[in-house]
Image (cartoon, rainbow, N blue to C red; front, side, top):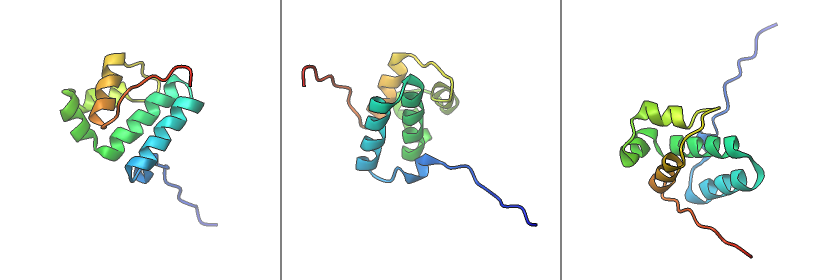
Length: 96
């Protein structure tokens, strides 16, 4: 019997446009926990180009990968910089 080769699923490869990215991030915000949100931001950064995001945030690529890796606990400032570099905005709606 031959072995079946399975490759790792990379969600970043499927985040092809702004609508998909927005839905993916909003889903992580609504359905997930903090780790899910950090993971989602990391996947979006990969989809947009980690080098580009690192340059825009003023962080090194390795630091950015580390901050957005599984189990990390990045500072809010890091998350805010990355979201802005991704073209996002943080807003709060209360009572709606």
